[in-house]
Length: 151
Image (cartoon, rainbow, N blue to C red; front, top):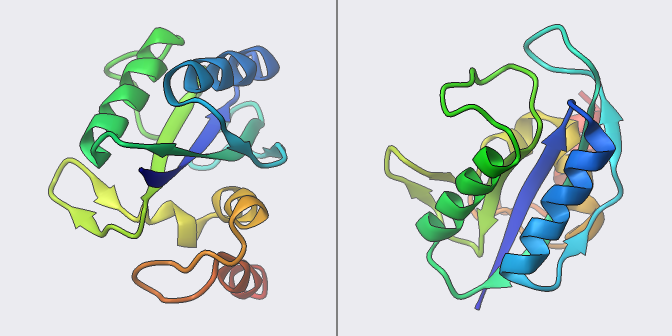
């Protein structure tokens, strides 16, 4: 089994869509580690604030299979197949980490770069996996968060 971490976000009917997304993730992957929810401003566009959190779970599926399931869940919960990167979301599910694998194959890039760019991703990840080490930077997420917040 491989430990996976997924960023979860919504800014459309936030509470309802986050709860529905968590329920869907539980149905497929079982027990979840769930960070606190953070409310943050939309990034890259004008829009309602987002709820953001990170969940962790174990899976024996491949990274690409987990990624595909997350995409299908986004569509099931209202995401349009042709939605823009920076736009409102019913449910946004981004695979952040798949164990300590490093993947960049044109379809999937892990670890996801958002970890080091955005506090709304790094903070909840550090909440549930503070001492886990980033596979490229070789720093804990707790340390990475301190560095990001000090900039």
